[in-house]
Length: 143
Image (cartoon, rainbow, N blue to C red; front, side, top):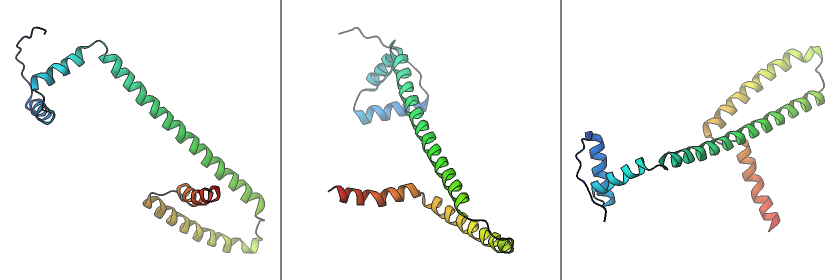
């Protein structure tokens, strides 16, 4: 067994309370907790472990951002295709119907914004709803 020395340290009351609480919860002497913490902090691979953990977290965040970018691109493309299709397939209105069409358009837009606000408040997306509606049918057709 390695020789042990006696050391005296002053800890802040907050750290001392946390140390006592942790030692009591894990049923490990406070000296053993401090020794393990110091050994971990002073080990040459502590920095490498920290760097590896940070790299893993950054990789996960990068993949999540890439997925978000992909979903945004798909959503933008879908909207652009819809608008192009709509613009090419809807005939222009005669001049006499322009005012009524603009009034109806404003009314519909206000309804759209209200519906969008309600949907966002619920926290569900249309993609999730469609996914839920499509999944049971496809799994029933497969089985």
